[in-house]
Image 1 (cartoon, helix red, strand yellow):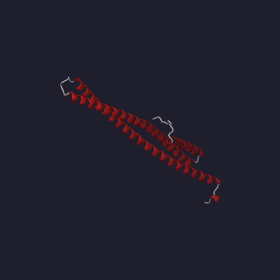
Image 2: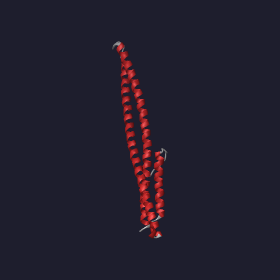
Image 3: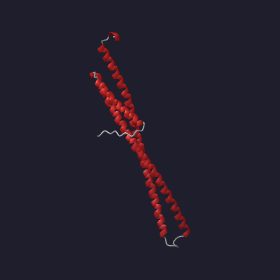
Length: 186
């Protein structure tokens, strides 16, 4: 039937169904994007956590090596004069002191980098949670708008669309770096 031969009720029904179908398509696309963002930030969390663990291991390695040289230096100091060649002992103590300084510097660099990576874990985990909530809202909105097609209720379409706009807002605000704390208790 052409639009001119349809009753006003049929035209309203088709218009509502088209509007709802387009809304579902848009919500699904935004939901896919939010889900992709959640997946990417989850990878960021894992990478930063691994890097932080690596840096803490390097910190510990430097700490153990530095401590070993401190012990060796103390042992060299305890030797009685005349037990070993004094020039060799002094040279050994200098080598120990240089190694102690080298490993202390390595510890500080590793600590700084590990703390930086831990900060990235926190930021990425927050973003991941936000994208997850956004995806959930978008999925719920798709269901509600789809149901509105079946029962032909504008109120359901409007409610589902508002929930979807909430998901879109959370996605955009998270992308822009706003610190929003959205959590779903579970």
